[in-house]
Image (cartoon, rainbow, N blue to C red; front, side, top):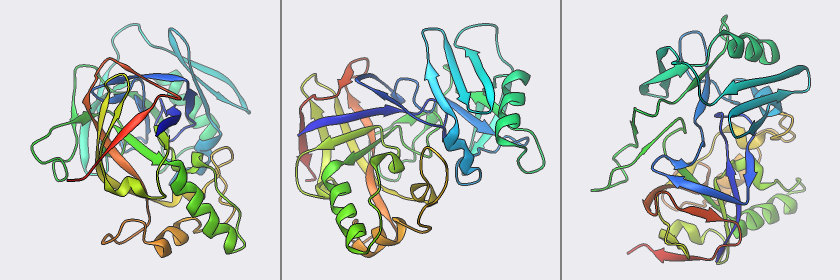
Length: 281
């Protein structure tokens, strides 16, 4: 088995950045979901509500986050600088502290994406001195924390599983879908389709170990093209995943596994690196 893709999404629900290598932190891959867009009440906003978020390109330089959109000049947000005001934000049922990136970022986002829930959009950053705990339900005696993902610091998907899904889609006369629809951090190759359902952990040659702890239930974002935000075939591939029953005993559409770091904080994962899968016990 090996890693075939590494991707981070610095701003939750905007476009990702493909990498050849990525440093593992306690919160997942460095800079992944480190920023988030919120409405005037501090509630998180994603492509579920604003599909056009898929049109915003994200870059990271040595000293800045850069957002680009075809209808506006780029927005540059310094990685370092003066202290930013703190605010409270919400992600699903979680409420946590964030740093507000200020009026220029808010104005830019509202210009390119429009007002939402009758208010302006704002860009917030996860504070380095705060923790957001991962739900304990699937961790046993373990503990983990994250920044602004929906719930877990890492998402792992399997190339063979996508191939099997696309076979089913093509058999129904539908177009195949790319892996980008599922917004994974790691894509791995090797093993049978949906073998990841039975993996307890993945270990790399460099000594990184990731624990796969919860199947990822998918939402309508996987129906949306991750360049345009449009949904070419509404309800697909959600409907087909439900029919395939990819996570036996669970109701819904599942693809990929939510994961937590177990060992190797500070080390790097690399595309092409070999992996060993440990089956559930």
